[in-house]
Image 1 (cartoon, one colour):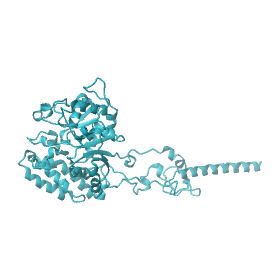
Image 2 (tube, rainbow, N blue to C red):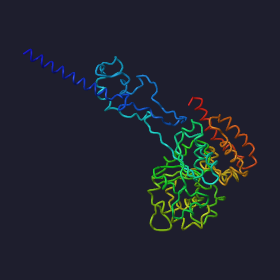
Image 3 (cartoon, rainbow, N blue to C red):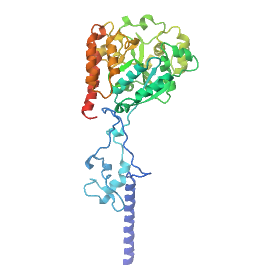
Image 4 (tube, one colour):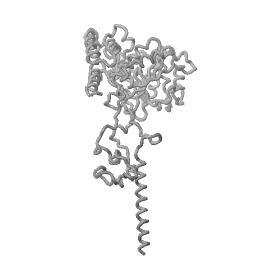
Length: 449
């Protein structure tokens, strides 16, 4: 009888040891190991809001055991058959390590409060450069990279002879700023039908923007800007307007004029236009996915048309009645589809019209200019010296130099010389937001970011 009891006890002990061994191996398999198949993944580098974006990501850091999530408390200790979880030093886990080892993988959930678990959105910006627009485009891109927080992808559409020059310039920028963006240089592409007409519409290649939803089929959302745009604060703030779109809105632009008495569309247009004074397409947010899917109301047929066929029909009907090319076509589209447009304030697309006869952009008067639009060539003549001073200050700035002494102070001195113009009289609007943006850079530098 005792012999049978000994055999039974031995079987029970053997069974317990087997169970413990299985738990030990299960727990050990949950640990990351170095090696070919089980190589520990490297920490992804990520640009995060509030970071400099110089390629430095939020790493795990050297945190103590008390700072780890409960399912990671035993992680740093070597685990094997001879050193299972339940034999770790007292106080390491703070819980029953035997059960913790078995169930921690099942209970493991991403911590939404941990920024390293949040994917960082990449912004997309497109610009079209033809003719003598290389320097102007590069200066615009410099203003983006100077202040942007999240990573950004540039889509540069340019004539073939400009491709190598764009690449050489962008690749020569300081490494810390070069890590803040990627870029692709595209060739100019128009539909084979009426290609010559599209290319010459208004300005060379300007109508290329109309076909971005068709060309960039893998891009969900995009910010299009003209070459004569300058960002005086992070582009991230403009990008955030996408979150304010309702379910019907597919694009966002600013009004063409704030004051109807000096408006162009409401006085001279020979075609339908949006709202009371029309819209300006120099800064345009595009939800490309929605644009590709939408059927648009129009005045040419009772049937609603998709984007590409709508453009072709509009060109045929209105080509003799439009003055500002692709912008006029966009005005016609949103005249018949007003529910599809989000309108943002004028300080996001501030042009000489907002100050040439006196200040008429109330949002700029309250918060300063966020995006400067030097249309009609004012960066390159003497008609609006305040606009030209901003352009030259950013163009001449070298990445890595102190932005206060190398950009802001010289600019303020140049703006003092423009007070004989109406725009120069409101020069504080030109630097109000720029001062904050530069202060943000200085703050990051002082914190060693």
